[in-house]
Amino acid sequence: MKSTVKDIMTTQVVSVHRGTSFKEMAARLRRERVSAFPVVDDDGTVVGVVSETDLLPKETLDAGWAAGIPEMTSRVLDEGDQEKAESVTAAELMTEPAVTAAPEDTVEHAARLMYTHRVKRLPVTDAAGRLVGIISRADVLSVFDRPDGEIRREITENVILNELRIDPEPFTVTVENGIVTLEGTPETAELGRAVAARARHVEGVVAVRDRLQNPPS
Image (cartoon, one colour):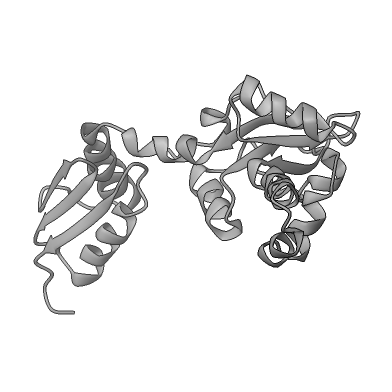
């Protein structure tokens, strides 16, 4: 069974409101040892996210003014960063709308969201959009810590025997460090390809080495 977001999420989430000041957020980043804040309304609905990346442009702008070269700083910062550098509240700094996940989403789906949107963390929201947790890239990658024996059993028992309803005897499945090696001679080439394809989607699998001796199609 695939792990879901609720299996890996952190439920104690450090969040801020629209009016939270730049100074308070900068202090809380260090104090709470987090790298971003979901921004919530009074009812807990997630409306955006403020990350370290959103706060850093101000440091660049201030450094340029301190050095007496504001025009150089303006060339370094693009228009969006320039606006962030001059912003002072979470509402002005946040990225919106926030990319979020639901507790029932699979970890695979959450990983795809992170990759597609190039984000390092996802607030987790309920059906009403209220904040219930947060997951990071490290949380998503934790599925690869699954024991090799569990992976092997799932491929042999769940994929080959239960899903594809074929005899596991012709197959030799070995797993080392999450890398699956498939050997043996399936009854048909179609079945061999099906086993290899489904094994790639088993949770915790890093790679599949297909060494099956498939008969001619």
